[in-house]
Image 1 (cartoon, rainbow, N blue to C red):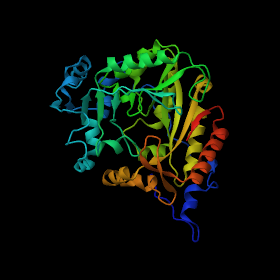
Image 2: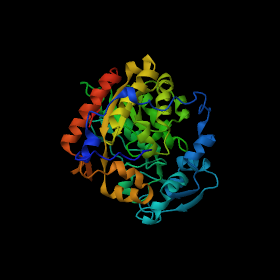
Image 3: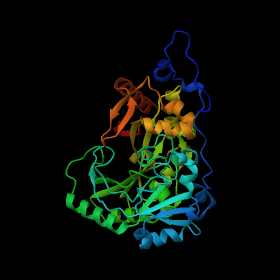
Image 4: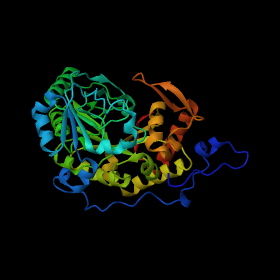
Amino acid sequence: MDQPPTDPAPGEPEQQALFAWSELDPDQESGPDPDPDPDQGTSAVFRDTPEARRMLDVREVYAEPAALDSPRGRQIMSRVPGARVTEVASHWRIPSLHGNDGNISRWVRIKSETLVLGVKHTLRTRPNGRSADWIAPGASNGCAMACAYCYVPRRKGYANPITLFTNIEAIVAHVRRHVRAQGPKTEPNQCDPEAWVYDIGENGDCSVDALVSDNTADLIAVFRGLPTAKASFATKFVNPDLLALDPQGRTRVRFSLMPPEDARLLDIRTSPVAERIAAAADFLDAGYEVHFNLSPVVLRPGWQRDWADLFTHLDDVLPARVKRQAAAEIIMLTHNEGLHEVNLGWHPRAEEVLWQPAAQETKRSQNGALNVRYSLEIKRQSLTRVQQLLATHAPWLRVRYAF
């Protein structure tokens, strides 16, 4: 947030500034950042560009021996020449990374310069029913980006660089068997009216993974041959290399969006929001289904005005062909006390908006984790308000899922 929150008027409760509906006046505020230069970032092999190396410049690799010896492991190592390799018994137990609180001060550097290679031994597809029908066994865990609200580092302990799983053949074979076992989808639902939807990037960002690995390409390729299913992944990074993967309508890209002011504070090391929006038509034309994640919705002074501006920007710049097939998820912020403590060590300004004890309550999530979310009534009113703003400023954007 570029400006500190304004103090409440005498006698006015602090919560009023965060959650009242009367603040919205779109005529008084400017819109989001202008569109980026459309000629930038269109290299035929984007992963070799300086921009890609700024995102992921691997200098240290921790690897299980079996991962190093695999074809995918050798391919990945060929793309990170000069990186120092340390063999480890397990990608989950690396003392210098996991549980080492000294890494808080190196949070971003570790994400950009460290890579872990492992073998995924437990291949399991879990039911979801919210964003997707199923959560496929991910080909990665962790990320080179540093979003302040990300849930993955809650479980990895102070550092969560990308872990790439090199037994991609086993992951692909598992997914193919699972899809075929389901048969055709007989009833439409919020995930998709016709196809079973499989989230392939639950714990990472497939667009960033593709900078050093063909795991994302292999997963997109397998769904191309599965007419009863679609792959799906959310991303905050525009990787033009994905435009060449020919998904033939069997992969859904969900570009995560939030007001640019929030993204500058919270979406660290991600593509600018305007760039994500501008990429939508290119991805649609390349054969992807393109949806949007309005996520997370963070309640802070001016949030309604800024979301209204974002929706207006979407309406202004997206071509009709994108609008016709688009749908959205709305997801309110979920936070965590452990992550709050970590963030205080490297990005305390983010916690000024993420940590709002007066408005939040503890709740056990579907995966068993103990997290904090906006209290039930605040969340209900806020979700209603976001949908009202969407209906006013981008009525064509169907809400597929709100939570």
